[in-house]
Image 1 (cartoon, rainbow, N blue to C red):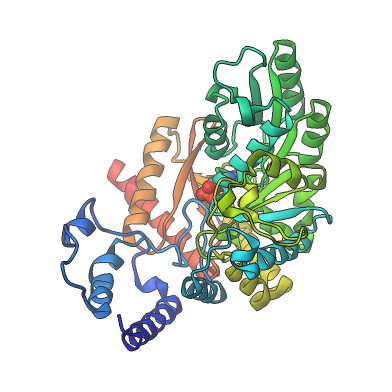
Image 2: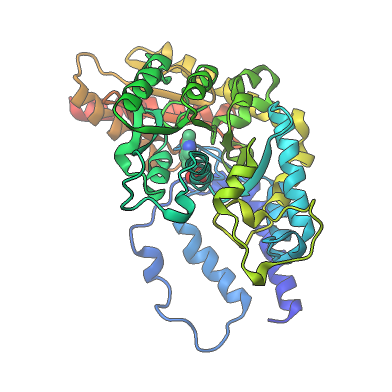
Length: 477
Ligand code: PLP
């Protein structure tokens, strides 16, 4: 492909991205394609002869775009809403252009050094003490897997050499998290060979926070029964409701049982950038590791998860392996990031995060996150004061759990009605919500985290929800 052709197509693509981000709401937020539509519209086999870049851009607009659900849309309130931002996109573009592999310091010194520096900036923004170091992974699921691998390593059972299978010389290992912990904790436990039943779910209080007394009781009972607890995973911002587990109490109890403490702050952690929300990470300085995801609520394009640890030596012990073909003669002070996880090859993800921090500054980031929390409180107020609607969980950050409760309806009817309301709203294309269940009660979720979301979008969501409730109610009567 000639450089001139690339230049023209890339300029057109950048122009399109700028136009798109000026008004993502021109598209329906949730894709309307049916299963198979995208694939069947494209040739089943690759072309024999090369095609011009223009042809691909045409297909991108005609066929790919309709199959896109727009996470950049200000009406995206499902799951945990996220968004890319201009500086982040610029970083991604340059990363693709450079296409370096930062597996070793020498294979691109700036990749390692910028990653270390950027994550130290993030550490400072979050108000963590010195002594934490970070690495970027693709997702919180992988960050948590690494943290729990380090916890297993610290248990001193020589799993690295002997593995787990068939061993009669060691107790069953266990990991503890709350009933509301994300499934990535279960997956990590499974992938580490501990067995799913050894991911113990600790009971929560009325605000869906892990109960320290229940944690203590579970640890004591398990030790008495011959299990070996290796890690506790409190969460700052659970997936369903953004409840905040009591990290200081968890750390205190976990220490008594020599457990690694890994804090899952994948979504909620970045809120500590807001000075008045810094308390969210109280106690974390006593933990061993923490994951935060800039690709969730820090306006960083997918993907970018950060695993912080205060014990990089144990993480390294779990993963470092040096075949001859990777031996380099670099000074001792250099870090080779391949030593701290499974992956060898490493994308230059730090560039986009560094650019975001520079473009917005600490105050700019805090202002946006704070605004999202205000919008959530406003939305919760509207729901709270409307007859026939209820808030179903405390609003701790930028997520609101709520539902319509028609007079006299039982749980089954409430679930059917709210599912119908959600589907109706989502199908209209202006806003997109998702749901969860809390103690078996069907609940809608409005998650605010998109850099372009403002009051008007939240008000629109509320109008659409009330309109949908009226239609669904009429249809039922
Ligand atoms: N932890 C929490 C609290 C989450 O809410 C999520 C996803 O929403 C994850 C972990 C997993 O994130 P990822 O998709 O980066 O693996």
